[in-house]
Every structure is written in C-alpha cells, then in structure tokens.
Length: 77
Image 1 (spheres, one colour):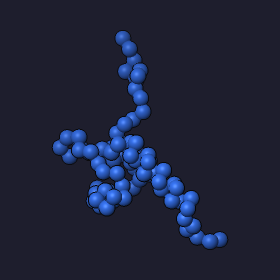
Image 2 (cartoon, one colour):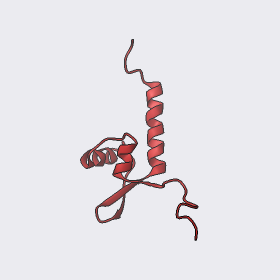
Image 3 (cartoon, rainbow, N blue to C red):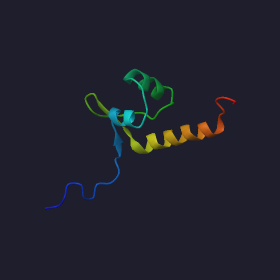
Image 4 (tube, rainbow, N blue to C red):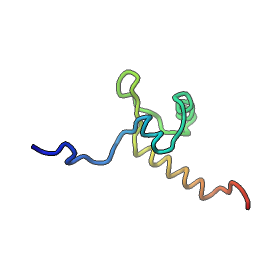
C-alpha cells in the first residue's frame, strides 16, 4: 500500500485560511472589493459558498507587491 503523501505536488488552491497564513488579511467583503477592482486575483467557486484562489495567481500578486516595495520609498530617514 502506498503512502497517501506520495506524488503530492505543491498546493494548487488556497483557502481563506491559507491566505491568512501567508499574511494576506481581509474580510470577505474586502477581498471581494479588491477582486472587483482588479487589485487581487479573482476567486474560484468550488461548491456552494466554498471558494479558493489559484496559488500561482496569488504568488504572482505577492511578487508584484514585492516589486512595488522595491520601487517605492515609504519614508525618508
């Protein structure tokens, strides 16, 4: 019998809990507003009220935020 973890690749979908673990705060309303404004990747409805986000899109979004940080000076010391 094979181990259940064999052949499991990287996580493809992220839940709200996963977003919080990544340090992405926000209520459902806040995330919906960001999605509608194009400021956060759009969610995928799995079933009923269960939603998730593609990990690859969230990774790109985080990389874009890091690039903005490198280009923007928040304070002069």
